[in-house]
Image (cartoon, rainbow, N blue to C red; front, top):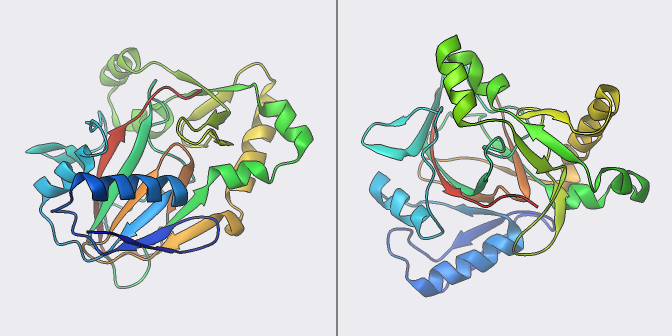
Length: 270
């Protein structure tokens, strides 16, 4: 088996064909790893596999995370199940990469379309390396050595009782990560801040911290560093959380959008 890789844009994303996620050998995994590093977002369509096979596929790339806050499938704790409809109007509609509040945030995520609305519900992805490259040299020199403090509380803490929130804050204290992360495999630099989880920028005033976060967010929001995926049932998308941010559009209510994710544990950013 040899996969075929068709780029979606010159900057980011590729559609992968010629493979079955339920039956991949080491050679195909090696090809996928290379394509993943090259394109950062991979789209695999018409993959009619079981939940167990989804988990097994993800585990080929590393140890899988059990998310401490997001709801899952009881018999499969590695699965994060995200259901959005007219009663629960939830979508991750803010630019972010996953679980940056962990000391060792995720390496990558593999998301499956289960129930997809007839219109809307796309996911947009942004190349944080390309976004960083477009910054001015003077701004880069200002932020290159700064650190951001990431905290889960603003997003997930509101769902917890005061007692449970305090327990989780003790278990997952704020994490200190570089504003500009170096990819461990490629050496490329990329933006590593987001409004969802960054509490503040260390060592600068609140005003300057807000300026930094806003400028970096605006660079991520440039369409020329993005690709957009239209979902279908049994479409899978794999993205590299170390150099990609994503945004789920909330333009499909009252229709239902149900997706399921496994997440691969990563290393400490540097």
